[in-house]
Image 1 (cartoon, rainbow, N blue to C red):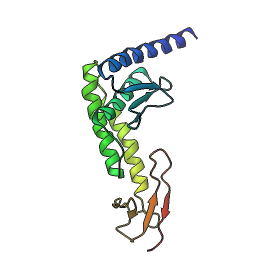
Image 2 (tube, rainbow, N blue to C red; image 1 turned 180 degrees about the vertical axis):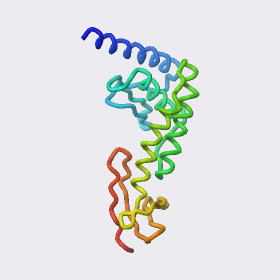
Image 3 (cartoon, rainbow, N blue to C red; image 1 turned 90 degrees about the vertical axis):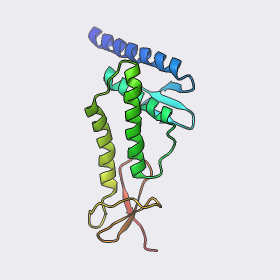
Image 4 (cartoon, rainbow, N blue to C red; image 1 turned 90 degrees about the horizontal axis):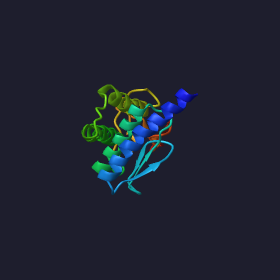
Length: 168
């Protein structure tokens, strides 16, 4: 039990030290302890947690969210744009991380980006023939193979349900 408590204190110290430095260097960003890592452009807040991650992974996630903040990321309008801003936030996190002595592992970044790629792959599958297609300007997908159209949820946090669009 003592070893477990020591690990929690170690993680808390690493996060507290990084947080203090980030708060000092970026006073316009509010850092709020929460249930997950998240950037809120509306409130200019970076949410973070010390639960469920290694100290290194938590620091990298925190730097990633700071990357979103520094790049001024707001909302995304397409699935590809989401992947672009996630990639840009990781690039910025690498840059900022070096300032604080963190080198973010490239495999970690690719694993995180893979979760978005997998999400996009599921969303882009035609519900009729399973061919992959591109999202259209109106947020719908249209199959290049069979012509089917479908809608997907705008949330990146939910399962990628696909509802077939009614013919117009």
